[in-house]
Length: 91
View (tube, rainbow, N blue to C red):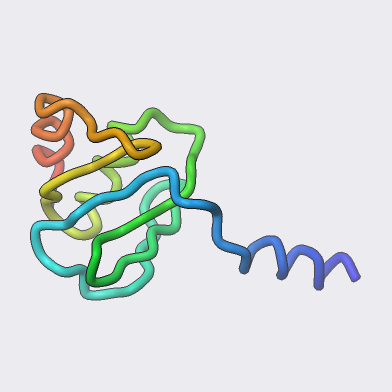
C-alpha cells in the first residue's frame, strides 16, 4: 500500500508555478533540472514550485534546454535583468 501511495504521489504533476518559453523547442517533453520536473510542449515549459529562488530554477532550466525568451513566476514575468542573468547560464 505504501508503495502504491508513493507511486501515486510521484506521478501526480504539481500545479504550474513557473512558466518559460524556450528560444528553441526542447528535445524532450519532460526535463529534470535541479529539484524540478519541467513539462514542455508547443506552448513552452511549466513546473511546480521548488525550495530554490526563482532565478536559480530559471538557470537550471536554461542549462538543460538553452536560452529562454521569457520566464514567469506565479504568472508574473521576472525582471529583464534577472532574465539576462538566467540566460547567461545557458549551454
